[in-house]
Image 1: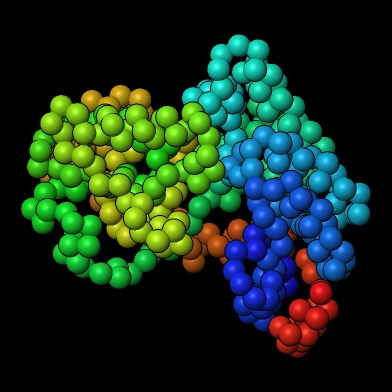
Image 2 (image 1 turned 90 degrees about the vertical axis):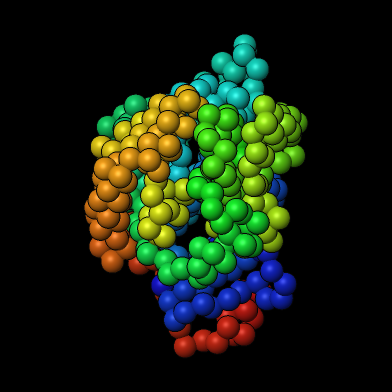
Length: 370
């Protein structure tokens, strides 16, 4: 049985029993430091939960100060005798490579950030029993910092094929797209980290018969940062120079509706059987030999790869075959059971995740936890 603690983003009861074995509890505000004592308070109410699973994306929410408190927070949980499994959603071998994304100037501050980031990962290794990463390449980066003695499991992203909820014609009408133009869609929040500036620059090298759609909108974790506001303004200004048609930025969609499209571009495409052009860095990170790739920081080569897909039938067929093979190898029916057995059933101590009387109603559980 699982208790899932999430940000409280709805009205009414904080507790939702979504199935016989899953209880969702709205506990914290992810951008506030008081999220940690709130989680600890709720953990007391579920004292029989002996295995805690933490999902974390470095500095995705709340900034460096909120992130720094993860170590003492997990240490307190460890002191209660619980087993901790930590999903490291992103790991950098050198955080300095993300200088522009973080808005850090060169010099002492950047050097301290580099040192602090590696120290952060190293300290995590002392309080976490098992790390879970989404690709073997991420495991390699963790090993560089933590050493080979740390227990790291690789649980790749799975693909769940989605049914189309509307036709191509309907989608184009909603977005105001020319029915006769070729459409290139770039998923991911508009940020340096997602390569939005490279994509916009590449559009200048595409024929006017193409339309670029940037799906995802502004990066929610950066929207209030001064360096990001400057980046976003420059990005939009650069999108409509030299007579290039301005890209369509899908951010007018209601927030909850657009949120699923802010990340996981390759996964979004594979779920919907949409062809993918990927950078050589992503190709290497996924351990693939993709038929149509480009050097990640070169807009001209990205434009060339896009044009090649549309104009070369051989490339089209190769991409479709590669997509099919990748989708089959990562289908949810295969990977999800393996993931569950590896991470939850096969946990280090084999402790029971949680025991509660599933016969209780949501109201009774709400009364129990307060």
